[in-house]
Amino acid sequence: MTLAKIPLAGVIGHPIAHSRSPLLHGHWLRSFGLAGHYVPMDVSPENLQEALRTLPRVGFVGVNVTLPHKENALQIADIVTDTARRIGAANTLTFLEDGKIVADNTDAYGFMENLKQGAPKWRADAGPSVILGAGGAARAVIVALLDEGVSEILITNRTRERAEQLCQEFGPCLRMVEWAQADDAIQAGLTIINTTSLGMAGKAELNLSLAGLQKEATVTDLVYNPIKTRLLEAAGDAGCVTVDGLGMLLHQAVPGFERWFGIRPTVDDATRKAALA
Image (cartoon, rainbow, N blue to C red; front, top):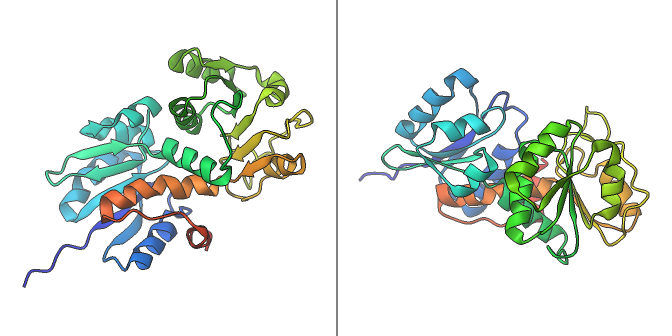
């Protein structure tokens, strides 16, 4: 009698001990009674290619990649999805039977699913979206908003050049706003998204005025430590619908889990509790 192989997956980063992904995937594996494992792996940048080429040969069906490997993983992969190419980074790798690596990015999907779950009445055509920050997370948010049909995106960043670059790359729907005028952009926005690390535990606060924030606005913060940032607290006090950042982490994990283990999980209260354990 030949036993079926137990599928292995995991997350690669440097460092990686802080990752909540093993808690999340472990919860889903137990919930479905699946034989499989999801493990954290600390891999330095100079060893990334060797690790990714070796993992399929020892039973791995795929991995998530996080900082600092998202861009390099895209270069190593044999097949790259259109979404990953547009975002310019990979976060989900699937290993084919012949050992080839398929690179995808599910951050845009995770962002939009979280936004819709947390703000069911949100509409792409409600008005301008405002993105704070111009890093990798901002790129994923831009792709998500454009694909959903948002026609006007105001982007502001402490380093002007990075915001300008995104405007040039993604086209006329984007408009750069000076960081000094970020308060004005917030007043104009119906969807406000913080993609910076400002407000995260151990980081500086996001010191922008919300005095002119429209109460009809939806405000979401990609920071999830703390779950309720000062931005979300202030927006909630102003009467806005607020969406925390934990859900993006949970939703972006769904496609990978389905590809690797064959069952599509749902993001519910039990999922959130497991990720926060």
